[in-house]
Amino acid sequence: SGIALAMIIFAYLLGSVSGAILICRLAGLPDPRLHGSGNPGATNVLRIGGKLAAAGVLIFDVLKGMLPVWFAYLLNIPYFYLGIIAIAACLGHIYPIFFHFKGGKGVATAFGSIAAIGWDLTGLVAGTWLLTVLLSGYSSLGAIVSALVAPFYVWWFKPEFTFPVAMLSCLVLIRHHDNIQRLWRGQESRIWQKLKKKR
Ligand code: G3P
Image (cartoon, rainbow, N blue to C red; front, side, top):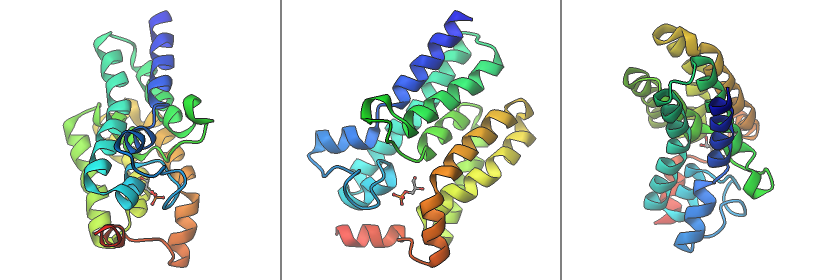
């Protein structure tokens, strides 16, 4: 339907607004695409700009995934389209039309869309990310492990959303190929080092 298509386009455009690039620009911080890991995301802003800027980026990028799905749900758009809308938001973040199609890794935005499904699921996925990061010290490993298990959680709670969530997981995992190589070689930087370097 027309409204569903409009929401898909809206989700992609909103997803294309990079929280990291925007907030760093507004806060007078270095361009996250040129510093640290080069990734325009909350983790890298933590590395180059500190906790407050990183928290802002995280909230902004989570909302990009959450709001379009919520709006679409309130507009009674069929479930099938909710998944497409979530994927569109994530694709916007990863391939932003406003930034030469060079965006982030989609972790916060995919999480936002999954969080829109329900609070139990939100807690499980966030808990998995947090536990992995606390145990390993790697933000990227938190994202990788969460992406791997999220489809199973969704399959358990809301099976009708398993396929779109699996698609989101694939996007996130594909975007972490560099991190996977660094982790494998033992060259990935830990989140604590990032914080220490800053202070
Ligand atoms: O959220 C992205 C994170 O998983 C990895 O970011 O900057 O360490 O490559 P980064």
